[in-house]
Length: 526
Image 1: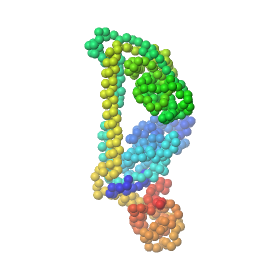
Image 2: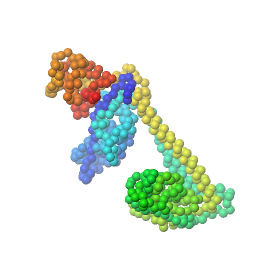
Image 3: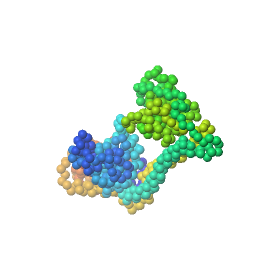
Image 4: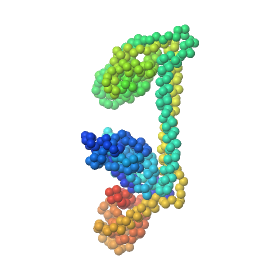
């Protein structure tokens, strides 16, 4: 944030709370688990109040690991995988090491204000992740992260306003989130009506003399089934001049997705007679029970891909492809596919070619079949339009949340009150209180004066303090170091330090050192 609103100040996350993380008791020790203590993992974080956990641990598990009990109302943030995922504890609990916890300093920052600020920065925090398979950030990165601090009273107004506005946005999101299930049920009802004859009941009575539909097997309309091979490949889609094999996921979701493919290490083993072509009717012969046998009709092809051993091509007339596509996706078709499947594992079931060809389907006269296809396509086009509108609205709502949060932390969401104590004064007051407490204690640490020309009784001025800082070999210092070199004129030293902090190009910055549990000053490099 380049330009802060009047009365605001920049600090770091480390300065606004006490940070820590959890741990994982040894998994092989059953005495550590299934106890009375809720134990949170990243999957439990919900960007809101956390009231439940999937796992629990025992007191023995806490004592024999780095897990710690944290209080209700503690701010949580994920450091691994879903970096930036947030939560506020609704109960006493423990967490694993992938979650950082922050007990905010209530006299400095409002908890909900800090929560919303972190929510506004989730995308940026995610971009800071490092590592291979699982990106992560450290507590060091979190504690050094910038935090714009509004006056405390303004923080409360901002948090309250965000609570009010975002509750309405969340309500809109909840209404929008019902639409996918509504569309799914609508499409299923259309397919059920289409394959049972209900969709064209009036049409049939008006146009046909015979109302009967024949019962046939899939083998009566499919002339051939073709399968590919299982070949070791590179786990990436092939490039323009490369060849590959489609994965099950290429035909799983109702639309052919050629990006779900693998690249052949040797393109000479590509089978031309198993090349995927526009117009192909494809299904998976192995998948989860819910997705087994889900069909697609290929419309666009841009890659050199062949069938795999788990994806079948059914050869038939064009009109039968559309009819079988609807039937296999209908409740009646799904039941027969599931009943014809084999395998004991729910995660991967199979259907053989013989069982597939034996499936029974009702077959209307050709003219009625054409009318059914026309009506289904029309109704599905309407559903697709609604789905697109839903996705656009969902994206706008997501952007609206971020827009509101950005506005809040630019100081534009609530009116400012000139009577509010500024964040700068708030920080100075807290620092002064700490200094007074510190000065009341005996000074056990003697600091060698870096510049021998600067004496304890010498008059204090800004130039001498700057020279002292420049000659300082350490990268940081505390008030006691200055007091040791310049004497005990705390008020004058404080004014000089804050003047240096306010410069356009400051030579020092002020941060909170968790280990010392106090503010320190750090030299700015360059």
